[in-house]
Length: 124
Image (cartoon, rainbow, N blue to C red; front, top):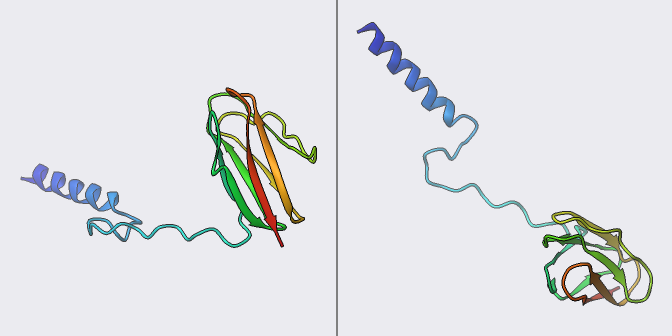
């Protein structure tokens, strides 16, 4: 009898510990989604094997763009106007750059399949 009581208490402790720190445990209610990025958070662009996603973005002057390499090979980015060239961006890594002045920029990608480009519109 004593062994059954010890086993029951141990099981209760394990079950209680599994839900520790989770107020939604067992309620069936999912936790709320994370808050949206702030107005100055970098704009995220995915680098795929053949295109930027999205291919064209518009942002306010002073904001940054973060390009994430979602391919299996290193990629390099450059501004068509010669204003910057990234180092090789490893698969899964990112490259971030701020755009302080208004203008329209063509961003080129190379290193994967055929080279491709996207458009960046920076407004005041």
